[in-house]
Length: 512
Image 1: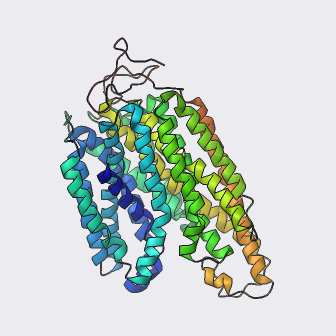
Image 2 (image 1 turned 45 degrees about the vertical axis):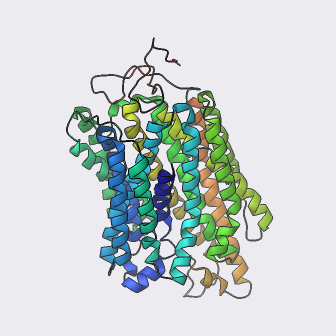
Image 3 (image 1 turned 120 degrees about the horizontal axis):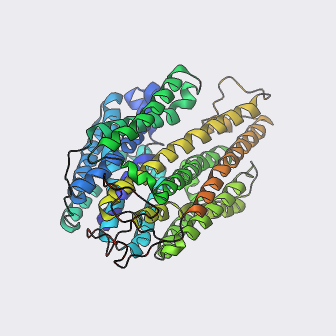
């Protein structure tokens, strides 16, 4: 577990640690025009590679692939730290994303292998807490490394920690079971990677390129075409990367949608609350992390408690509905923030939001792993992780568009200087007279409006959670078996999880 926790920490940190280092990277490598690709390349590659890692783990055993993905991540981290120009750094970040995507999804699947179903929620909650803390700590570490050492240490720090991870994993992880009986589904993997690429590009660059621009329209059309072609290709594959029959499981489909919604809200909060604190309240990047400690505390505590409660399968739906309802309450509270909202009041809002955020992501994963057969745990975990990654990109993109358009609309009648740049806190702080309070108030209200617009999406997730079954479902066969159709019941892993047994009707399995 220590190896898996370290791996999740490294992979999650590298999604956010470069955010505060980007200006210095652009200055050193002379690449301001393309600097956004440093973050986008990692997100795009990790999202696209996730389903393939999950399926290959099901086929060839997860331990060896876990070691390969971790080694690839460390090799790419060294390349990032040694990059001499921006194209080299972007290419290395893409390679790092491929490794990081494997580390995350294989970690979640390995928990399904080595932990009994009744205990999975507790362990998944631990990983979820690490993921949430990394989202807050990442930008702080990036700022410290950039200011005190060099931005290159944001990548090089992975090497000693990752080396420890590799040693522990090589010695402690179970060897796993090789189940490969067919060729790798290369066509499905390429199509799914292209589909993920299209979705991430649209959500990441829609605002910058223009949502009605020819590039975005072409990307949307191509992505829709790929989505239409993929099911037909996967139905013909002997070992599909994305088993279409898996989508007949109500738990898998609804859990993926809930994960999408929850991550859209979570990353909107994690990305834009520090911006609100830095611009409106004038705190530094480091202090903004301190202000968000109530959110982190709420997230960590609720992750841990939700994981323990999830040991009882009948509580899964209750936990999800409660978490999403608290998330709605938190977003409604954040929708009221203004330029003069007291710090103590903000702390209360952050705590409620953190508790709601923490109760959902890993419980969703536990619900799916307790539903599918052991040989499908990797693919099912990858489907949920894939949906969550797309949700994160979607939430950040939509919230950014809402914030930008809302802020611009409120500034339209203000006599701003030509050099004003709303994205830079020092520019806002340099305003004088009555202009500065008006701009701060406009930004605060635009931020609050963005949270209010996200709220109905989370309410939809709560409704979907109500439709989930109250306990574990029991399938008669693996969801990925090409010749088996999924009927009214889904499958549950038997025994201790990952031991290759499937509970069948009549063998002591509990039907819904």
